[in-house]
Image (cartoon, rainbow, N blue to C red; front, side, top):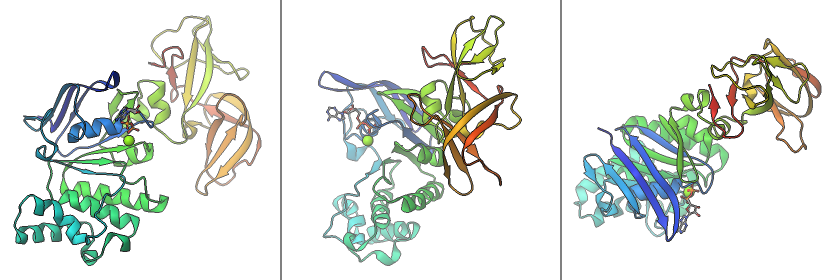
Length: 356
Ligand code: ADP
Ligand code: MG
């Protein structure tokens, strides 16, 4: 049986419906990430699971219990927020003890629990400090510690790393992954950052406008997206899209490039004249790819181990992005690149749906 189950969950603010019937099953011990653009409903859904927002329709179950209308404190969840929400006048120890004390736990037990959590989080030497004497990363660890001591059935994180600088974010990301392993806990984590989603999740839930677009492992979403939205949201830099048109003989012709005609690797036949979008990730261009195209490179971003060449910068359409590796990388001018039709993904531009 799943640990958390949402069934036809709806959220309305007055007359405005923002979550439109979400079904979702989360297994015990799973690390599930809700990802999607700002405003798509990630926090709302998480807060509904926590009980901080009411549920307008549908049901939420945690373990064997229907918790849809149960008090947040009785749901067996603990939430970690983007703003750490620590008590500034309390030490780390007091911050971590506070909830347990309020719950009436005895002092000896609290002491053990706080010491255990501090050890897991490497906060042992900071227990007597106040939050203002801690770095952002340490503060967030205290906030996580406060959740750990409660030994919740489910941990809920709402963009916990967004207030940290880039370096700390990477460090804390690894910490959270380690914590998940060590605690073997069920975790639901909200982020708008697809890199965080890809690196942390056992299972990613891609949300758009209050609906689930796709649920799957990071690799499944990367390799087998159901539609354009998921294909472009997962993967960085994002997937390139080439406009193509079906010819009478069933072949596809790229609209913006001369002599790029090939058989698409899709089983469904596309009627002559129909438009198709051909998706190629920046890392999927292939020097030996049979479809040859030439592009004028406008900008090269050299990151050291890898460079990204951009073509068509400043045009109305999004520029093409090509990943370059190895010793001799072009710095500009016209380059010829290859596409392997078998590695490309195909989409119907009218519906955005993947053609297979
Ligand atoms: P995300 O966390 O994905 O950025 P939210 O869950 O915060 O998105 O918001 C989802 C949608 O619900 C947004 O359109 C937002 O404007 C709306 N919303 C959130 N809270 C309220 C509220 N208290 N009243 C009305 N609309 C809200
Ligand atoms: Mg949010």
